[in-house]
Image 1 (cartoon, rainbow, N blue to C red):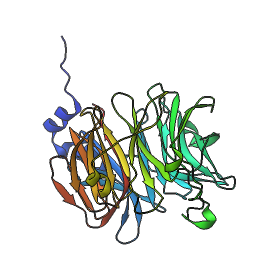
Image 2 (image 1 turned 180 degrees about the vertical axis):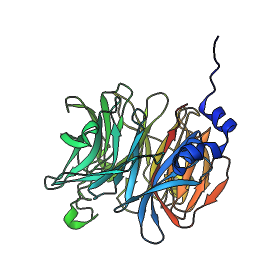
Image 3 (image 1 turned 120 degrees about the vertical axis):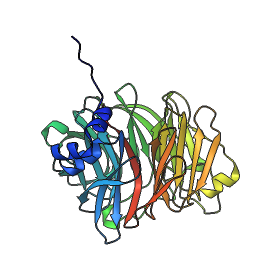
Image 4 (image 1 turned 90 degrees about the horizontal axis):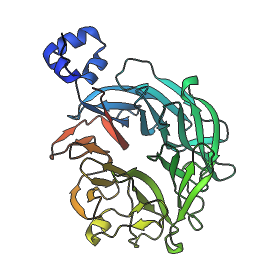
Length: 368
């Protein structure tokens, strides 16, 4: 006789929240009752720092404390652990379980390095890669951490550029894409940018096994002050990137582009009113592979735009004060702001006035 199986969602609906709460800590119970959650760093109005888990309805399910301001979060679907990185030039990263069952683990960058706020797990979850600054040599590196040895640092390789920011592991599981912002910083000078006149941003592909450079692409000399910062991959495998311009404020360079292996970087033309609305600053990039769209946000311009990935056409724009964090949600996107707003697909908004949401947001799909 065969027994029928019901999935996690059906079980939870049938059992009721009270039954689940009796089995598990409250944070775990609340997290399990939703199909997806969203992780993001925040600053509270009282000056404390943390990372929060949000439900699909934009409700704070639970949070962890951070020693200082965080930046981005990455997730390993195998171990179901996340890591939130310190904002540049921070030296801490915190490993946490988004269901709230396990205690967080904090690890630090080595002497002579600091984090740039982003990282990515290997496909088997055994290694974590993080963009870092070798600040005394003004060189970007990717630090390599052994996740099975309490995130012990086991090596590094160059990013073949300066000021690396976001990195992605591409679909082959071997190649890491790095956005080198091109800006020199040193912790002795805080977040001061030391080489604006001579900066040279680049987009590079690096073999994570050997550390060898696979490809390197630079923008035209006239755009050498267009810092490449954030990226995501669409369903075709193309990498979309967003830039922040450090040149004259009256300039209006293109700010969003696509990268494909073996091809020059392609900057996306867009209507002048949309481009001007970004005020030369793209804060986050997120793809929605299911919908075939890409969202870009600008907290400087209080603007969010959604792009059709196939055609490059702008399909929607919205004005949202201090919007930056963005993640796929159904056929659209969820966005967070520095004013505590959480904007959901369909136009609904939720306010958490005690929170200043930080720059990025990560969607974590729950396992069935």
